Image 1 (tube, helix red, strand yellow):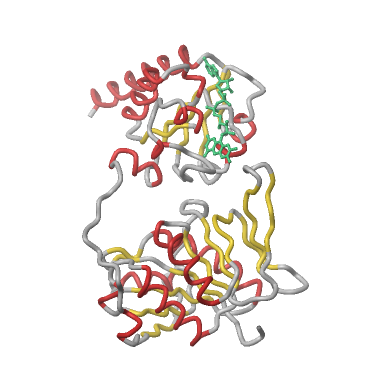
Image 2: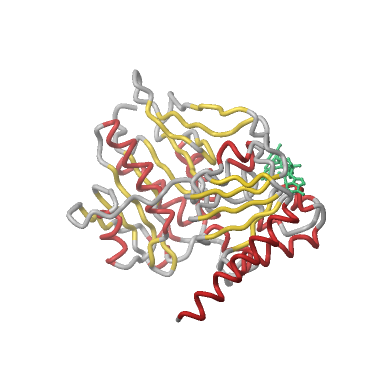
Length: 338
Ligand SMILES: Cc1cc2nc3c(=O)[nH]c(=O)nc-3n(C[C@H](O)[C@H](O)[C@H](O)COP(=O)(O)OP(=O)(O)OC[C@H]3O[C@@H](n4cnc5c(N)ncnc54)[C@H](O)[C@@H]3O)c2cc1C
């Protein structure tokens, strides 16, 4: 166990461009590495733009380990797992953090089983235990009713995934420097029985709630699916995307890709505006990195008001049309003065 040292984050690239999740993971990884007093490495598989590799260093990595074989350009479970297992064996990191993205969620369990290591998925909190230096991995458990803190004291590396958008990306420091380590991978490890035939993106309209700067969401308080028209209208006026509580999704008022929360998506917009959403612990788990939360709810005791920056206590069927009219009037006035 004592041979294992250093913290890794698993950076991701798509078509050679480093993905934002990598910078979010650097925020987590930097904090852990600083607490332990060890270096932080970003590991990235597949050919990647030099500018992206530099950015990983500017945003907190002390070193970048890249395996840039063309076979690793697209995520394929077998070559990715074998390559990572090889890198783990060579460098022996004590901690590996990956995104709970579709590739991270596929790769990390395969890697854990290959390395005989533990893995905690979908962590909301990561910390270091004072006395032992073990990784403390916190995540909701038992239907989201408790937060469980999990340790892997007997195995290395300790492995965890964290959800995209659950952390702010690390800021760039142009003065930071670091090492770039290029790894050559044995062609045997790069073989795959699975062939990638193509890529079909999810419903484009819903897929963007995690990237949107404004998310307008509705819940059971909307009473019926047709009333999502109010949410859609407000989102369109604000240039935002439409989100929903699980209750609204379960009732078939809107599709699952719009669901925000523990079993849906985590969002991190500049503005999260929700109406008729009570603010259950599971819903709040998906919105806590939002910069501003505005809630409309007729119940002054609703849980959502505990986290909202601005709360409007009122009937959404009165408040939303007023809000829509006000925004339209303001936009028209601005257009007239331009
Ligand atoms: C394992 C697990 C995972 C879960 N994952 C998620 C998840 O990812 N996302 C999620 O959202 N939930 C999730 N849930 C469900 C969660 O517990 C709640 O049931 C759900 O969030 C409630 O949705 P809601 O706020 O729309 O409905 P409710 O809790 O019923 O709230 C409706 C709100 O609307 C208000 N209201 C009613 N009429 C009006 C009106 N005219 N004007 C204004 N306000 C009005 C009410 O005061 C109330 O606060 C999960 C539950 C479990 C057990």
